[in-house]
Amino acid sequence: MNKEPVAIAPSPEELDYVEMDKIIEETYGSDKENLIMMLQGIQGRYNYIPRPALAYLAEKTGVPLSRIYGIATFYATFSLEPRGRNLITVCLGTACHVRGAKRVQEQIEQLLHISNGQTTEDGSFTLESVRCIGCCSLGPVVKINEDVHARLSPDQVAKTLERYE
Ligand code: FES
Image (cartoon, rainbow, N blue to C red; front, side):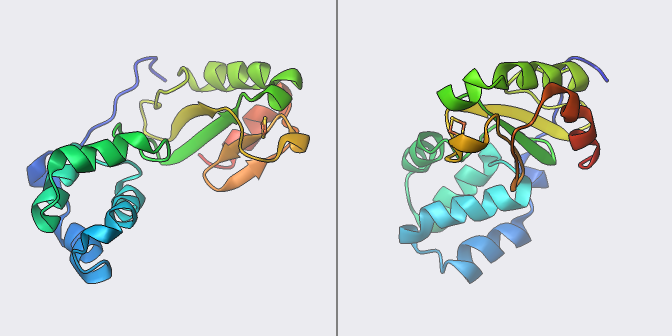
């Protein structure tokens, strides 16, 4: 695996407008009250929010692009950078940290040849960290997509990642 993460973002021409219309118009009736849900829908489609999608959302709802951009950058759950098919979230909060979360994170970085915030070249994994995911007694905790892996030790990391490749 190459150390430099590469991810291809869709250009405005490559955006899936059928899917975008489904999310914006069919599901949420182009109602600007549903902006956050629309952004969640777009992120669900791409695993992140492509910038051309923000402009299209502004056009369809009549909400200024600056406001939509503000919402998309305010919530940590949204990402404007391409993410891999699997999102690994390592908890580095105090409870997890004292139980060795940093060593688990380093093991993931070493195995995938990426650093925190990066995506593997093949687009399989993105690595991110958070300060707490709300299950401190189970630390160190690593979330992969919606799965929570509790009390993960560095030597369990490789086997755990294999399940998502
Ligand atoms: S500190 Fe890790 S889950 Fe709370």
